[in-house]
Image (cartoon, rainbow, N blue to C red; front, top):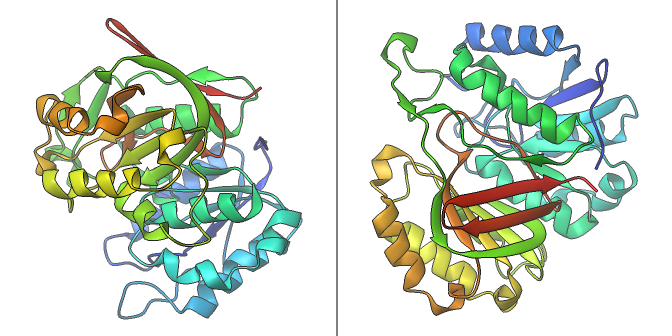
Length: 327
C-alpha cells in the first residue's frame, strides 16, 4: 500500500457532487482547508471542482479531466473526493485506466464514490480506499472528527496493520446540521450475526452503488473477498435485503469469505434482530462470518479502509476482531 507523508500534495476532485453544492458552506470549506494545512498536507483543487449544473455536478468531460490531470501530475500523491452523490458511474467508460495504472496514487472517498473505487481496482489492480471525503474534514465536532482522522491516518499514513475498534460515540446527524442539536449515541459494539473466521480482499462500500457495477467489466472479482456493505437513509429494510440478494446472485459469490456491514441510519429502522433474520434467510451465507454495526457508511464518524487490501475477520461470541493488514 502507498503511504501518505506530511508535505505531500493532495488533490481535491469532484467526480460526483460539486464543491459548490448548496449545503457545503464557505465555513465548511475553510475549516477543511485549515485542517489539512494543520496536519501538514499541501492541498490543491481540480480545475473544475466549482462547476455546477442542474444535477449539483458538472459535465463528464470536466470530471474526467480533473481525474486524469491528477493522476498524470507526479507531484500529486493522493486524490480525495469532495463528497458523494449519484452519478460517478457516468465516468467509468471514459477513464484512462492505463494512465491510472502507470501512475498509482491514493484515491479516497465513499458513498457514490464506491463505483469509482471498485471499478479502478477491477481495471487496474490498484488499491483504492473507502473513507473520508474532503468535506469530512469540515466536521467541527472533535467527538467525531478525532475518530475519522485516527482511521484515515492508520489506513493511509501508517505502515502497520491495525484493528478496527468501535467509536466511543456516534451520531445519526451530518456535520452540516446545527451543532447544538446533534445527538451522540454512547458506544455500541459490533453485532455478531454469523460466527466464523476469514481472511480476504476487502471490496465494496455503498451496497446499492456497488450493485450498479454488476454485469459490467467494472465489477471486481469476488473470489476470496470480504465484502464491506452499507447503505444510507434512502434505503429501507426491504431494499437492503433485495440488494444483498442481488450480490449473492453473482456467479462468483460462492467464493466470498465474509461480510462486514456498516452502521445503519436511524431512518432505515434496522435492528440487530431484523438484520439477523435477513442474513439467516440466505443459505449462501450460512458458512461465512458476518458482522454488522461497524463505523463506515452514512453515520458519523467513519473509518477508512482499502478496496483491494487484505482484511482479517474473527467473529466469535464475546469477541469480534476486524483487522486491516498491511503486510
